[in-house]
Length: 107
Image (cartoon, rainbow, N blue to C red; front, side):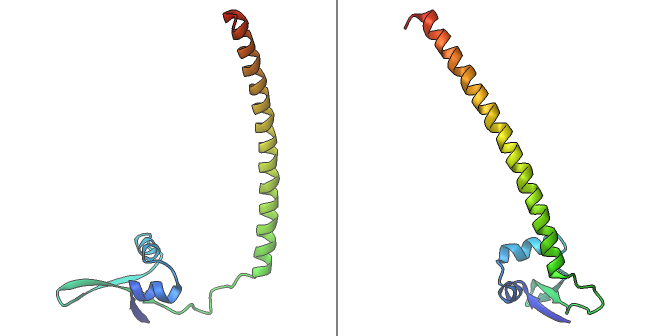
């Protein structure tokens, strides 16, 4: 186990300090607080990934993600088409109302 400061962890993983703090607050990272020179310093416990954890195949994940994305795109396209039809219907209604108002006001 290796202990590193928040700044060291951010530099090592090429992420911002803000994101490191968010990860610490959401308990995604193990931390230890130690007192040094009268100040409390937070250290991140950097543990190596154990080989017992199953590693997902990236190809399977990519194909599943791509299929999900395509179905989501189709759903969004259908929703956009419905919204465009509704917008056109409302435009026609507003135009008719405006035309009637001008006849009533005799403009």
